[in-house]
Length: 199
Image 1 (spheres, one colour):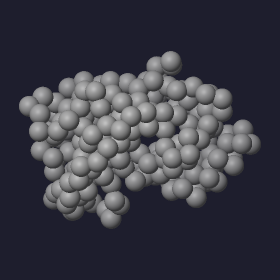
Image 2 (image 1 turned 180 degrees about the vertical axis):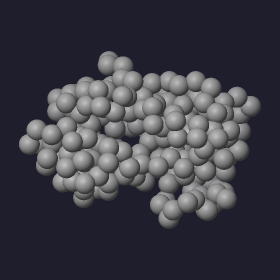
Image 3 (image 1 turned 180 degrees about the horizontal axis):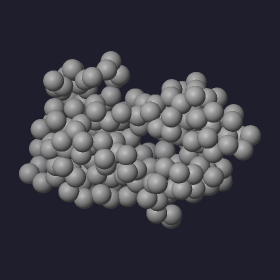
Image 4 (image 1 turned 60 degrees about the horizontal axis):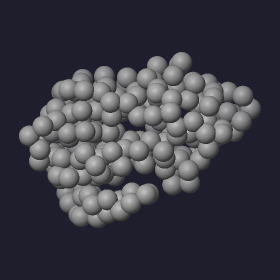
């Protein structure tokens, strides 16, 4: 059974430094070091908190790569939760679960004309290898059973529900279109069935 290992106050955000708490966990299904970021004590609210499961994307989150909109979705979520409160689960599953080096190999194939799913398949991987069991474990460790989920991805909705988390509402993020990621976003919408709202 998962439980909270440590809880530390800090400030987060690209545009402004928003007060939050950073949590680590013991007892998760794997040895991956996932963390939760809690805004406005959302885990202690009587109402279902805003929750986003954000999978690590070094190239997008840190280096603001033009190939995806992960960093922009993360920034949008932090700003929203800074205003309304929420729980951001930052999950260490780079490249939809294939890892950083394999993702870079997939980038090379995308540069040759494949979409993001075709590239992963060509490398011998499935469309999306991520498992959200540990996200559910983290919420359960926080005694959060009902959420208002921020996602465009039907897989995240389905897997949280399969692990006993009730979803009261689904809220999308924008699709942050920029030079270089149009093909990626269209593949997510057509192949991955993501519910994208273009800004």
